[in-house]
Length: 120
Image (cartoon, helix red, strand yellow):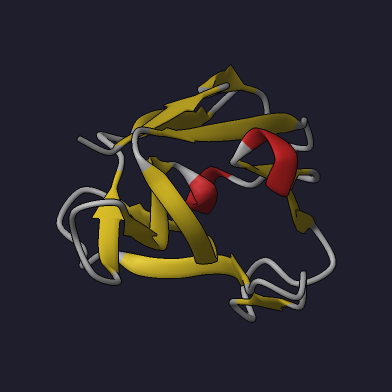
């Protein structure tokens, strides 16, 4: 059974910073891409940032220059450093991992999400 567990969300003032972490655990053989998505109330889930197995990142235009995604393959962990946060960044942030386990072929897994609220 694979689990992706996010942490690091919370309430922060505009202009502030947060760092999200996501740890993948279970009978994992290989992790390909990992990423962060977010969903604000009344809106569809959207890509925030992804990082492939070669550590090449991609970002949504709305977060370029403010957010940085990174990964630690030894720890099966992906991070999202969020700086210069804006109220419009408020959302539930979900971790995604594309991976192969001992029992299941390559597929996407999702965490349960962590709330990020940017407000004064």
